[in-house]
Image (tube, rainbow over all chains, first blue to last red; front, side):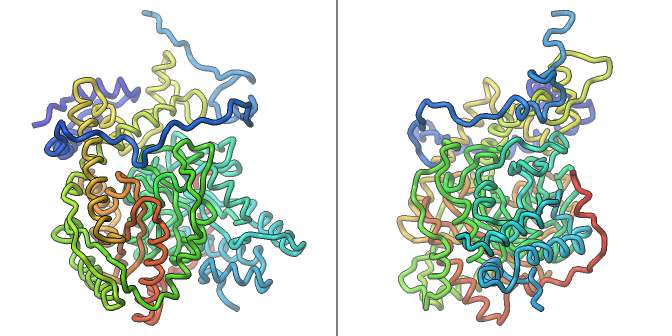
Length: 99
Length: 513
């Protein structure tokens, strides 16, 4: 049995910053339960003696010379922004009234 | 006059080099074809308005005696996951609708430097999450073999574009099969290179440890020619391999000319050959094995016992990485912004934007990934999935100690009907059972057509896999198998696709502009 409940999904949606509707939370709860039950089989073979792999081809640290490269202009960086003042991105207040 | 859209890229390149055909003529022929069929196929989200101008510049450069690359003047379609400085790049998502990046992906820059002609951007499942292109925010792509069926995914647009003769070449990206599975169901050729063999800079990331950009074409040689253009080290991608690669086109040409396959050991993955595969898929796969054996190859059954856990591991690793990668869509620097009713903090705006801008599959995977990475569950899910990844790599190592290449069907079924699996996420995820292991291990894989399933007349593909860095083997064996099959049939497989009806609609230009 999966432990995915509507409360869990609502909490995850908050962490992921997606304002899901109650209907979406309901639907996702059922779907995620089925998916989690199915993917949980990884624990059958993932025993303590098996090392984890995070990357398919082992690479050592990759460095480059510390010299200025070609970067975006301010205009280019702001070109796709929903709102800006010509030099900076504009956003709503970071803190709410109760904070 | 020859229909220029029916030529392979290699043949078209020869005609361009000899001066028989101009790039403007070739580009116009493909734009006309797109205008005629893309209303039905919907392979493209955007058409490059500068395509003919770019072609004219290449023609002028050629006339001036400039030294040009082997594919100079050949049109190419680009999956919408790749950033293009002169065209919108949406990755199939509303959240990026209309976004024009301030830079080109390295692979796109390489296409331009080699004088290929970008025709436009191709449709895909949103952020490459899907196996049918039905998760595109801009409507599905239709399979040119049967417009009621899926073209595979996520790169259904690129596969359909080459299968419908709208482009001789396309770029795709493959995180769990998004190049190889569409190739299988559209009768085209697609290659996922060794992880790190092709730059990911400017490819909108889905799962960074799995994503790889690769060629989508109608012939093995064309895929090799395109791979030669886009491959190689890129200092802008820290996971890019610094290897010097051999010419894959030379490898393909050697395969075309090979008299036999004596000395080649081909492993059949036992776990990817059995129940669960459509009867006609299994039949054509085993017939292809017979063709290979008759040509002198030694067919060996190999076991990869942990492949059984690959889909489960993949659907933990991918959502975990995707939930992190997609955090950048925060309504601040690019893309959509939705202000909630009555205003709110930047967090409220972010949540409202992501609710409105992401489709159901993207939300599903972000929530799943957030869960897999949560405190208390991390070891059980993400940690275990990474261990399975090690086990799958060990399976590959053991198999490649016995054989030179591995083969399996490229997809478990032929193209299914649009809508058939849309409401059942797990059924959709299982479409990639054959292709996911290669991504988890970073090894290269190719999908290429081997016939039509008797029960439905739809294309069946084989997958060839090689050890990491041995991509050339795919092209050599792929080209030999392609030639052996075409000699047997007396024609190419793609030539058997039904003719699409032509319309005067200009639907292709109306996409996500």
